[in-house]
Image (tube, rainbow, N blue to C red; front, side):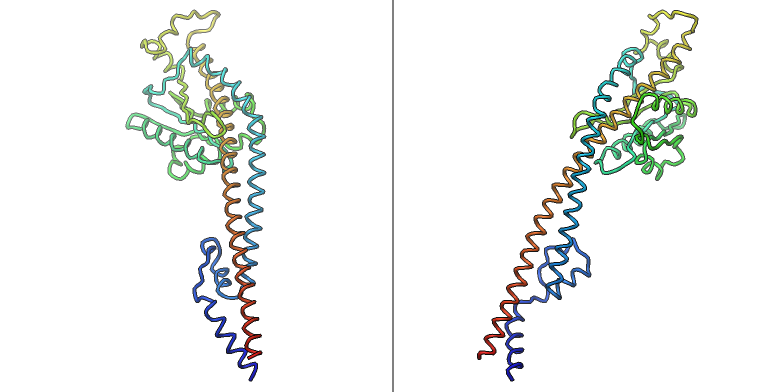
Length: 324
């Protein structure tokens, strides 16, 4: 009789405390199987929250380490990128940078990274490249892509596979230098016919800021035509050519060297922007992980306290039933 009375009293006191559909603050972040555990055994719910806290803490350690690695790489590349700006600036003063030039064969050189977790720099480059491709397409015009980097390649292959002329990846597998980039530039010039090369990259400004930029390199024929028409390149005729080379040969050498210098600067600027964007992204991820850890800690403490309170009520209820 005493045991039957204890069970009746226990059910009477415990029933109002257990809601048929309890409020679950982790409902959006756990699986349905774990959600069922919250409706059932209370000891399992605290274990689930503990596992979740451990996972978030490990992710936070990884993001902090990735931020430190990106900062180290950024310091190594930033000085070289700033020094490389002096290579292409004399060519811009001599040959100009005319993005509005109207030519038949346009080649869009899109520079991106091989790895992700660096914000939206790759999406920005691809978006500008698609806009340039659409702007320079027409019945009498031809636009092709030259893609540097795995991320831009993956995005452009979805809708512009037939327009991709050349793909190059793993540029940053080894430390970037001018010899490596000049070989890539020579490979592009040998395999692609062009009237204008439009290089799309992200120019580094600060750790939290980069500027999408387009640099234009014209073919020797177009440079000579623009100079003869008296446009922005009309001042080329005021220079005297010494030696046995003709004007066409000098322009050929200048445009090839200009392309390799612009490419070298663009690759370094984009690498700086990538590391800066990765630093910002990992810093945001670490802060978000910290906020999530605080919320999970609060939830864990509440769940544990609720479990302890419920057990105390059941013990008191049972003792009261026995005494009665």
